[in-house]
Image (cartoon, rainbow, N blue to C red):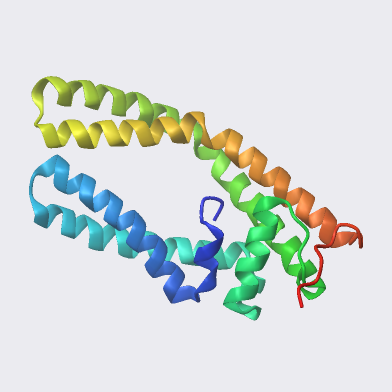
Length: 190
C-alpha cells in the first residue's frame, strides 16, 4: 500500500487489482521474456504474477484502509494525495478518512519492515547473478539481471528515505485533519 500511487485508488477493488497486477505482471513478464528468450514465458509470468499480485495487493489495500469503500473514487484519490503530500484536505468531511489512510500507511510500512534484511540478501544474490550472466549468459539475461539489480538497489538504498518522508507527510496531514486551522485550508474554488 505504501508504494501504490494515489491515482490507483480511483477504482474499486477489481480495478485496483487489475491495475496493480497488470503493471507488476507486465514488468516481470517482460523481464522473464528477456531472460528466457521465449515470449510464452513472459506471457505466463504476466498472467500468473499479475493475477496473484493484483489480488494480494487489492486485498492488502482494503485491509489497511477499510473505510475507502465508503468513499467515491474521486474522494479516495483526494485523500491519498493530501496524505502523501502532507497537505490539508479541502473537504472537512474527509478529515477522518485522512486520519484513517495515514494510519493505514503506517501499519503497512510497519508490517513490511521485517523483510528489509531479506532485500539485502536478494541484492547480493542478484549481484552474483548479474556477474554470472555477464560472463556466461545471453544479452537478454544480462539486461534482465541488470534491471533486477538496479530495482533492488533502488529498493534498498532509496526507498527507506522516501518512505520516511512519506510517513512524515502522512503524520502532518493527519495532524492537520485532527486540528483544522482555517489558515491551513486552501481557498475554496467556486
